[in-house]
Length: 219
Image: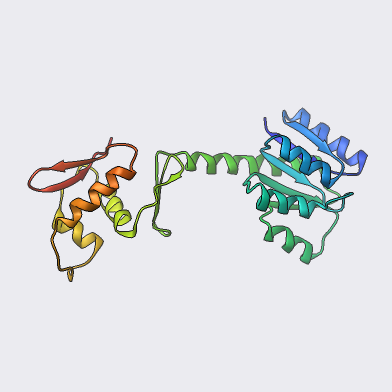
């Protein structure tokens, strides 16, 4: 079951589609104006919104903009509208609409699109909640969805240890993974980075191997 905000001013369309949503097990909050939709969004959180564009008061596009810029919400949003022109579709996707369906639309197909979007949201949410996520491209690491705010050196140290679980790595090996063979300085800089990394990690996963270096505890 999902909490769905449904913005549609045409009564017949709204009642028919809302009934399909309800039968599918979703809890639907119906709105017939953009202003009412915004008020409902202020009152409670939703898993997904289905928005018509041409409605009384604030347009569906403005409601979408409000969701993304004011609420800063990544809730799923499907635009359901009679507008077929490319410019309107581009504007919707510029505000990160997840899907765009033109009327007339089959309620059954709409429900299938809702199911696909909800599965994707659930999958992304599970990834965010994973214990440790390492983003190689962005040089960022997350623990239970929280950014660890690592420096580049700390990130490279974390990734090197994490990628070789239970393997003892010397300070020299770690220096090569963070800097390069041209590095000139005390290898004890690794100790300082490990100390800072341990402060930022909520759990103790880095073991000190006296006289050798460090290792990542796989468990």
